Image (cartoon, rainbow over all chains, first blue to last red; front, top):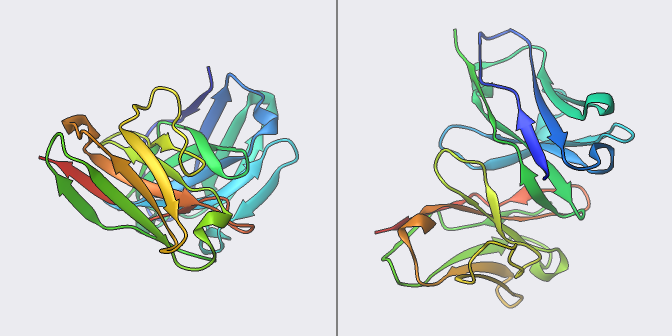
Length: 118
Length: 111
């Protein structure tokens, strides 16, 4: 069974750094793109970026380029999303998701709620 | 780049049929597959339609998808509405630069 299991909720202060994770199981982690989706409170879904763990090829949506870093560790089948300096506007639910067929998402993680508040 | 526009909200009664539209701003709706995701409150999205009109196993046949080139839009139709269908619905497509282009989402109320 394919599963994407994300790390738990985080509460941080503005300016702090953060790295959240997404562990894949039940499939060949290296051979599927994994992406991150932001959902701000009461808002819709936004694609942030995507990585191919097999060779670490990473693409970012322009509005997120330079704001976050996506990485992956194939030895532990885990993808990461990190911030070097959080802002209050980063408060959101973040989902990892598996990219299938080059055009859709077939599996989603359960989401990681990030709250940034002074 | 293109955008996908959905109605912000819809409401309908149990047992009725509702159709959610998703209009592509530029480029042909038929040139890239459209998917639909259902997101119930407090849950991750799940796929209800993929490749314009295909249903994943486990999704009831009350859910159907279609595309209309004349209006450059995709539609998700839910028949025999149930209270459990109350959720947010997102259409999604893609292009060479953007693997996931989401519509703004439609809040469906079944009352």
